[in-house]
Length: 236
Image (cartoon, rainbow, N blue to C red):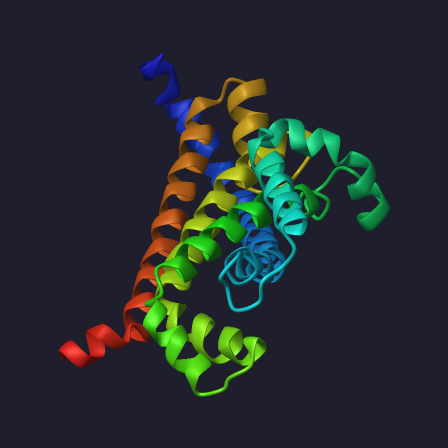
């Protein structure tokens, strides 16, 4: 199998595909990943804030029933495997985008799969916050909205960036699976050539590029988190 994979014919064909199709596929994967993660953060950030601020003893307590429903919705969406979720949201995708297949259409299930995950990550980041800081803000007469916007979120920025980095690498992994429903990008190339046509070298190249992208996103996220961490600045 290895000799067949790395035969001169297979290498030549892989290089041709690499030259003709990989650049656009790389762009599609990056475009979908960044856009889906951005939308997931827009939905997941306020939801994660509510999970912390809205609990009993939080800065903005919500009715117990509301909190219970929020947790159930998040847990349900997180428990559905992504492949099944893509199929379940076909009607919604068609309603929003006009079609249920294609690169742009794959953004809808990606956002629905990612925003509950982002909400939990935001919740985790905010729970790491020193409660004394919130108590000081309350003592100073700050409103719940001011505490959330000017204290909780700014103080949690390094942790939030680290967790958003986890989110974007997770979404990147999901984009590979979206190739099954006609989504474009590296996932489509890996499935079309590696699974359907048994051209494993092309699939290997696509996987390597995905790994490089993960490392790139992770490096950027780590650097941004370090730059915004006040504790590291004080240590210097």
